[in-house]
Amino acid sequence: MTRFGLVAAVLLLCGWAVPAVAGLRLLMFEQPGCIYCARWTEEVGPEYPLTDEGRAAPLTRIDLHADLPEGVRITTAPLFTPTFVLLSDGVEVGRIEGYPGEDFFWPLLAGLIRQAEPPGG
Image 1 (cartoon, rainbow, N blue to C red):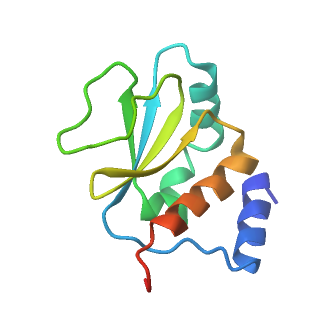
Image 2 (cartoon, one colour):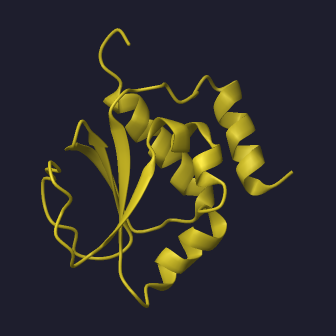
């Protein structure tokens, strides 16, 4: 079993399933030469759209120095890459700064998505 599979199994057993939340999107701020961005792309990128997290919060990659997409509001500009910003209806509701490795990335993201779930949702 892959590390991702093991982590996913543990999360499901603990009741940490990712809720379906309308209007969520994950921005990944990156820049050329970022070795941690490359690591994320290699370790997580291919499976991301196939996961509950990827379906709950589709990924949009954006260059660190690019303008924000229309209608996006974040609390502060990211200073380094990768920075993952979870948006709900275009407004930042959480972020992960840096890439802690796939074993930590998945539970951190799942927690952000759960926190974004509306009360009673």
